[in-house]
Amino acid sequence: MPFYVKGEKIYHYLNAFGLTPWMCLHLFYIMILYLYTWMTGYGYADAALPACEALFDHLSWVIIVSEVVMLPVFLYWFYVVVCGKTTLPRWMAAGNVLVFYCILYVIKSILPDTAFRLGFTNGLMSESMIFFFILIWIVGSKTAEK
Image (cartoon, rainbow, N blue to C red; front, top):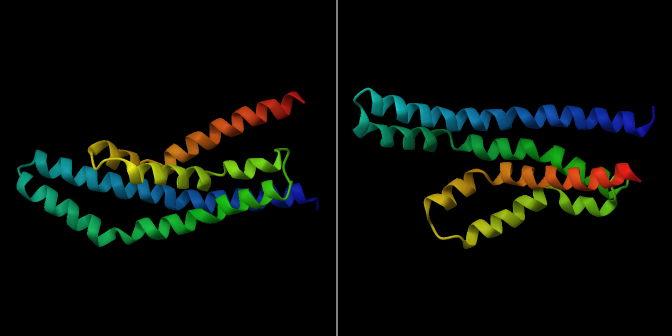
């Protein structure tokens, strides 16, 4: 069995495994937003914020676990690009989602403590993925031309 078939299967399964906690994280944040909206809309506005904070405090471990479960697919991507097992140039390993995440995390750290920073922080992984996809699009289209 050639590597690319095996590698594709590994990447496929790692993606499926990694996307499950990604969806769980989104569900977790939506639960908090829904609870707040429901409580403020049905006369429990005074209790809405403490209830949402309690929910977050009780289930915040889900965030760390989800992030750990998401890591293997990004590490595997780094591995196959560095080893030259893709049509992408090896330097593209530096364009890994985790590299973008670290850069954006540093930027987040120097931002003032505002609502923008909170939103920026909550979207760090999505923002990293956007930069990653743009880089793949640009380099992939140049590679396809050759």
